[in-house]
Image 1: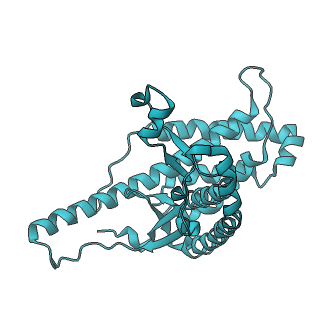
Image 2: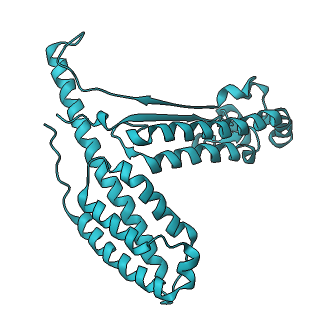
Image 3: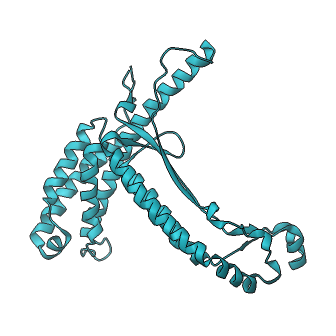
Amino acid sequence: MENIFEKGCVVQLTVCMWRATKKIDKERLAEMTHNYEWLTATKKLVDPCALKPINKAGNAARTYLAGVSLPFPINGMVFVPKDLITGVDDRLHEFRTDFMNRVGKFVSEYESLRSSAIAYLGDLFSELDYPVDVRERFSFVWRFINLDVPNGRFGVLTPEIYEREKQKFLETMEEARELAVQSLREEFSGLVERICDRFTDSETGKPKVFKNATVSNFYEYFETFKHRNIFNDEELAGLVNRAQEVLAGANPDVIRSSASLRDSIREGMAQIDTSMEELLSRPRRKIIMN
């Protein structure tokens, strides 16, 4: 049996935020309206804008991790190929530093934000809603987990439970492979569709504004694809190579200024788009690991 954990490991990233909201209890709602049985309400404990920079940092880390990993059929976990693990760990350290710096700024403003809330909330303000040490409500942690194939020893499990768990493990590995292949295909297909869409506006028939990200996202995909294609999807690899040849390292400024280059890229990407539609329309092959 092929063990996919020889190709990488699972990463679990957990980013915790203080929500800074509180439900208004039914007694207070009853004082405010006669129809409180039909209502639920929450109050914001501080100005929501004060938490946006922290949220932005957490979301940036999640977006980065999604872009360099493969989906994994356990909630909250993704699979990172072994050649990317060190780089991912380094980047997550950078994201954590940025996240905690923003938390520090929020903590320094916390007393002022709480004082402002008194004016906004009026009678709904309560000191009990506010944590004494608000910094403890924020965290940014990750861990690398290397699961293993059951080795045949029952340990504390009965033979029946062991066999059942072994089968569940094998099914999880199979699902992980299917998810990985399909995810890379759909991600590439989305890039191709977007660049094709940039060349023609369906309403006016004229080219749309050609954005830098339309091309830079391709180059980022090219860079990680060689590491993330751990199950050797040769059909997709062939189309990715064709896309690299079509773009030929051109930057957005050159594409915008050269009509002949735009025509060449439009034609090449349209052919790739057709091939991707065919590839994605096929039934997914059931992968049996034995």
